[in-house]
Amino acid sequence: MAKERKEGNALAELLEAAPHKVLSKLITELTVMFPDVRRECFDFLKSQSTVSKALIKRSEGEAVLALWSELAPDLDELDMYGGGDYGTEDHVAELLDQIRERLESKEVDADYRRELLDLVLPLIKSGNAGMDDMLDDVAYAACYNDSDLRGLAQAFEAMNKEWRTARARDIYRRLGDRDKYLELRAGRMEYGTDYHDLAAFYWESGEKEKAMQVAEEGLEKAKGRMDELRGFVAGRAREAGDREKYMALQLDQTTDDLTWGKYKDFEQLCSAAEWRLFEPKIVLQLKQAGRSERLKIHMHRNEYDQAVALLSKGRYPMSAWDGGYEVQVAKELEKDFPEEILKYYLSGLGNLNRNDQRKEYARKAKLMAKVRHVLVEVLDDKPRWEKFARKVKKDNFRRSAFQQEFADSVPGWRELGGPA
Image (cartoon, rainbow, N blue to C red; front, side, top):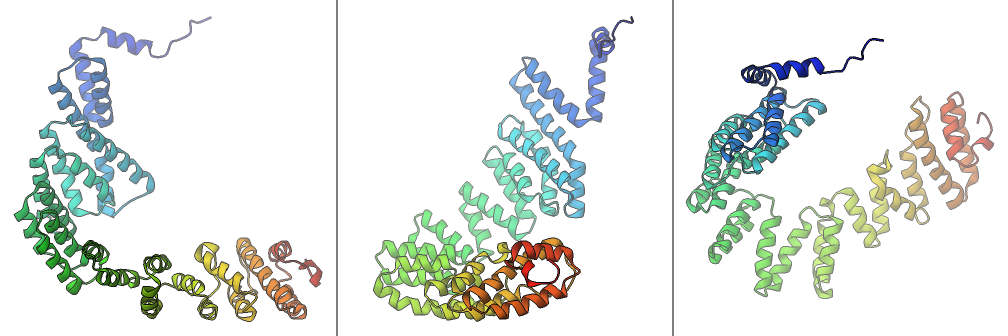
């Protein structure tokens, strides 16, 4: 019997026989061709050898650049086409995260970090790859000191884009560069968040009077995004014991994009007398709220006729995910407003005499059961139900999937006569 061949023996013997210079040449050529092999070599050799700290930093820098070489073709493609398939995006994201982790070890030399930033910043400026946050994380991780951060801020500023200018401004503020921060801040004072940012800066700097001047100006001039600014001024009013101003600002917070949660929180904040004063003002803004939020507030206020009117203006949702709360409200109102709720249920059935997918038949069957419930159990009008249901059954007698789903979900469907 032939001797069994052992995998890898020939290669192992060749490696053992090769001179050191030959092995070095082999590994060097492989790592030039394959960046992932180059990175693996760095990690393996560092773990198997005792080397100087300087060499560790150089090798970490080389490993970071090798990682970038691995992801660069895919990242360039993402940038060119404005994104890509999930597999490519996940691959790039994973390698960017590995780069960030290596940078955060603080073991990468400055020269390598600068080289990496030269590669990263054009893609940040483009903003077309769909990797903005991760590229930002890499850029920040490459900054080990204030000088690095200042250079990053200057690069952001030079991009001449508002979002990047905002990042530059934040860095200058973090570095305590008052003049540069104020210069960039003065270039954009439009929204409430802008005024809040400047007011908070002055407040933290101990210039409280100036902070309040900016904040009050923002309340008058800002064009939106007011939550943080109002919260800032409201906090100062509360500290000063100015309840009237504090509550007025809280009212503005509540009615700006009114929701049921805001309504409820403000009601709890008010005394009984304050609520009597403020509630009518909130109600005047109710039409500006979203449909579901309005419905919740009407139900809380026991305004059931208005809740029904709101339901009647819409259509029964195609999915419970689209209107779970509306469906719950409809069920609660069946007894007191049966005809209105019946009409609401019927609106979700659509055209019952057409071919469709089985899952759609199943959805309509469950809704048909609700129609039956209102007609038979709430209105006590079984003849009306049977007349309606028999016609639907007859119109669909050739659709076996339809009949099966309705028979499974609608009580008494088989007993209506005709196909089951």
